[in-house]
Image 1 (cartoon, rainbow, N blue to C red):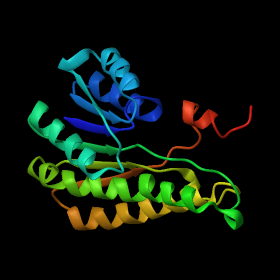
Image 2 (cartoon, helix red, strand yellow):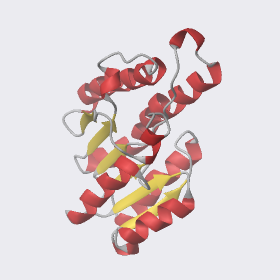
Image 3 (cartoon, rainbow, N blue to C red):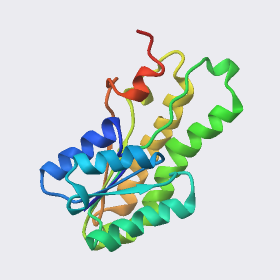
Image 4 (spheres, rainbow, N blue to C red):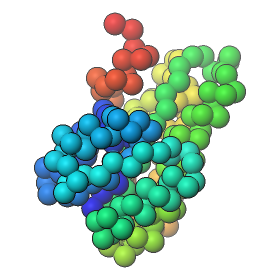
Length: 189
């Protein structure tokens, strides 16, 4: 049983598809209910996937995502913190509202969702997979705020890996640019 945030589109949906193809049941969480329902159908319906609409930055939604997974599929083996926010622009003129949003989605939400899931993951010797970016490792002009929040997630993931071991493994996936809907919003054609 897996819980994938940002599971309705892009990398999250591809991860959910891979899990279902391997025989896992998946809760896909995201903000857009219609997108999640369409993804759920393509994943084989309620037998294989369940949609949970909400916002990862909301504590009640995070608790509901975990509880939905545990109640529906009788446990939680894998948490994929894939939901993310991207913002571009020079750090020297960084918009404070954008910075707060990036921190909330890319750092705070995955850490607090992991906190909610850890008791269930410990029971099943589960896994946390935090989706990051190559921009967290290599500076990219215009992506400083995004890269910094993902670098913070990387560091926190390493600490969580030490603290949750040996019952729970915590890993980081850092893909490069992937041609998804969100990628198209900030890369010129």
